[in-house]
Image 1 (cartoon, rainbow, N blue to C red):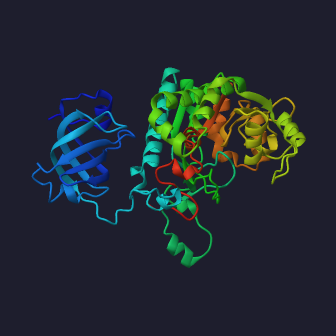
Image 2 (image 1 turned 180 degrees about the horizontal axis):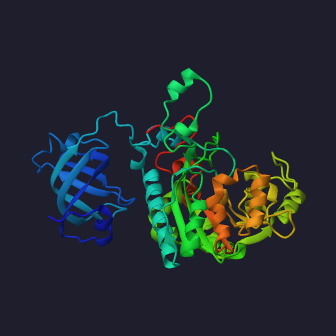
Image 3 (image 1 turned 30 degrees about the vertical axis):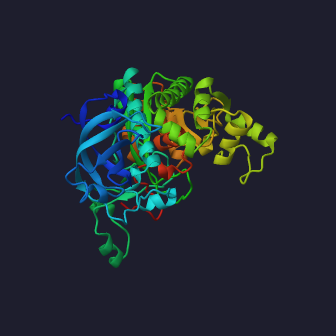
Length: 461
């Protein structure tokens, strides 16, 4: 008998044929001699109704004892369902229980809060909402690779263990093979030359710098992998471990960079709308009533583009009730970003040409000597979703910026070599992958869109 996943059964609706299906019991209703089982295998949002009756040899001993969460294998014939809301059902010829779930199984019929589900992160993908998020995340991951493959980019695996700090904020996790307990007892300074790598190392905050090296050889590259920030933040938009999509392109300026980033974001949104319809419909019904409208609005027109200086002027004149003061030279906070996108323009906004003093060393200095060729793309409900820039390709300017920042040039000779040997204009950006998943699904907290969230004080599972 042919095995089918439920997504295939629902798509084909091959009434009259016999199939084997495998999955977990979502709910179970018993009558006198018939049991109705909602079976889900994770392949799609929909569950398949299985009808089992007393003719089964194990009906009394096993089928009638089924509980939520139990794993079963069912063989039977697909029939037209007389019940409303479902086209087909499976009449069981046999049902085998391969894994029982006890009465204390925590995912019962009533809805649990997302906060509770985080405490059982190993079970939460079995819920409708978190299962839907997982499928949308998988679809968007596939779309990332498809987008860049179609445009001639090469996928580069940049290192997770690094000896630099691309963002320069010092919020890195140290990687060490030293006996930390012994060092704590002995006291004194740590001699990093005795560590595994012969120097201090950390988990990467970005693959950008290494991606630049490969862009200078292959022209167009991207990296898509985990990154880490030891930022003590418990907000709904920050994680200690998250995934970044980071393309780098040679012979590319800031405008080219923005064009690609806007096209990329629209591609991801369009892909989700086309391939995740049932899951997004669930999200609109239970999470965000305006979800599909917001997604379509991203596609409807070109993103607004305005310089940082103009953004500061608009925010100052708007006299919003902000917790943080708006002033030229200060970074925009989430409340400012969302005000621009949700109140002033009501659509995505690209802010460009930020003050040099608040941006990293690698961003290209503008001719005014005060700003850099940087851009942030801001989304309603999210704030910053993409950050990028044209990179500083001029060796003397780059050295001056690094020295002004107090950086040790010896640690970055390889990076400076990229400017010594055939330097070329280039640009790139970083997309926080969880933030685009959060935007597409309408989830309010970023911890719901990564399988196992890592946050201050929490690294369970």
